[in-house]
Length: 177
Length: 332
Image (tube, rainbow over all chains, first blue to last red; front, side, top):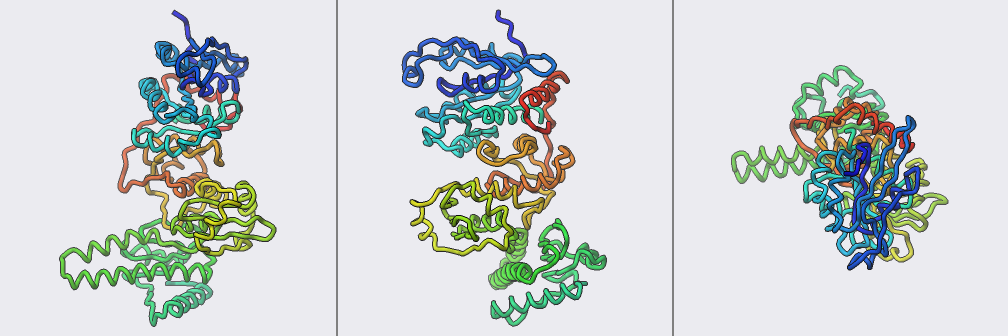
């Protein structure tokens, strides 16, 4: 079995949500990705997707590495999700607002990572809001409210370091408080 | 009332204006603890004692240097100005008139307990008496609450329209230019009520933003640690949702406040004790969260959740190190 360090933050979300890009925005080295051609509906969104995981890290001042893992986007690789999250610090969920049902996607991932979220915490970043504004931030918040969940939801550009840092900042605040 | 000579004159003038404008022959206000409206100078020791002895359901207009908490207390900041006091008196007398009318009609129906209910509901609303806006934030919040439309202008600045009905903010240039208004003295800004249909007609030529985004910015920049009138530091509140920090102004401590208030009800006083975040920041955050409708309140005492205890000290330390490494300024 692969040894996965516990000082890690997990990035998850559907294909094309920007997980690999978000990891690249804050990590010390370019993420190591295992991309292959997509199939089916996902082909429409992206030509390649991450099969096993993305990996990169941030090296802290004392030399400790905080590992950043991106889960596979395609749900047929969801067996990897529980392996990757084991012992992790928290979850960054990225949702592509360009998806036909982005709010439903958010619900799907919140349910899929329910146990991990309860043990740690989650922050939600909505990407591509400039391309598609069918679902507004209020729609996501309303759905969370209906589910009796209050999680941070921010509009982000996963290419922008500051936006990704806001997600991490909120996650750290949740974990600490 | 134990008012100073100047405050007494200001008070007399304000009362006269209210009576003249509303064609009222009288407005009876006294310094007795059992009065319907009690006006006191909080800097006077005897007045403070009268305030302490007063009945909780009565309206207390308190002249003070800082916001005074308590049921049905309306603080008028010193130095007291005629116009501000006049607006408070007007709002209070209207509420009182409604209460008296309701009580009289209720007593004619002679249903036992009805009058008491009306009284109760009326006095509960006293804490939300609208007073004159002291800054741009309060003016915008008024427009939103009252669903009013406003034209805002100032010398050398682009025109702004507020559509309180559609909760939108319209500006000729860019929404960031609201900062120029925030930097102005409040009395340099001109506010003019306008027909909302006129605002609708300008939409094609203006940049439109959600009014809540502007309210959030203005609350943080204009509040200066002053709690909204009618609100108290001791009422437990909770967030209904997190603020959208990615597109709105924030300070590092707002993450901490949000994380706590997303989890449980807590008053501002308790937040201040537990987090060591400055009360000014807590109040500014509260005002902003209230203005964008993401706060819910709870009456009575609340049971606090135990903070989530991290597994090990090592894990707690790692969070601080991550923040440091990413140069995230935060108070953990």
